[in-house]
Image 1 (cartoon, rainbow, N blue to C red):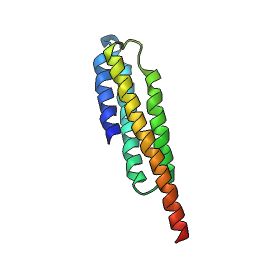
Image 2 (spheres, one colour):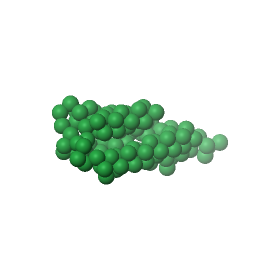
Image 3 (cartoon, rainbow, N blue to C red):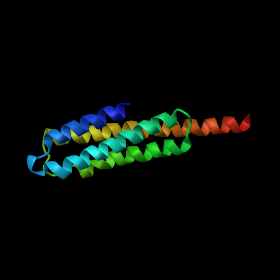
Length: 117
C-alpha cells in the first residue's frame, strides 16, 4: 500500500512540474503508466498473501522498474520537484523490492513445508 501512496504522490508532483506546452501526450503517458503500475501493485499484493512465488517475482520486477523510472523523468523538471520525484520513486521501489524478497523467502518455506506434509 505504501507503493500506491508514493506512486500517487509522484504522479501529482510530476503533473504539477510538467510544462504547459507538453501537456497533452506527456500527461496521458504519466497517468496511464501510473494506473497500470497501481493495478499491478494491487494484484501483486493480493497474490503475495497467498504465497505465490510467481507474483513475488513479479513484485521484484515491479520494484526494479520503479527504481529505473528515475531515468524517465522529463528534462524540463528540475530543482526540488525533481528531487521529490526521484525520492518517491526510489522509496516506493525499495519498499516493493524488500517486500518481494521477503515474500520469495516465505514462499519457498511454505512450498517446502507443504511438500513435507
